Image (cartoon, rainbow, N blue to C red):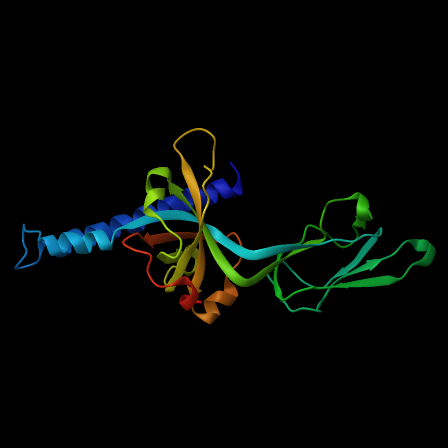
Length: 237
């Protein structure tokens, strides 16, 4: 089973547990009401419709991923950063020693401010240059952060761009996070089996200290409000 599959199974279970807790609390609240015991008014039905949600589980995505490569062959002499480090544009990332014939150290710098998402290269590795597609490292641009979740096919007609969402990121499950739907993928994730679709949500409200600690691949759950399109996407940003 892939890491992504395990993450999806974990977040699906997490979503089910939290949703069950919410449902139990709502049932408790209804049965303890003094004036509405066993009753449901049209006003309450309308409110319930407006509050209806679609739940999806998925993971954190960066605005973009940039691979750092090397055109000329050489040997990796030093790596200045580790996976998960914050880097700024122009920061030194890696030293590469060129061919012995005219050996010299070439330093490669970060082309943007972001997070070091992955470093497959190791000190002492030989970089073959253009003949290889293997990046030295990958930098994640986190200027915008998204949550990509999987949604059941039967729920897709209820969803629309600019609908609001409440988000729980598993690593920071107590943090208040909000977002807006920015994309509905019209193509099913798998060609067979019960249809599921990907929905992308841009994070619009999050504490700065939590935002700085988010990393691509972190698992998350989103509750998308389907009662309306919510606030205008342009005003929310």
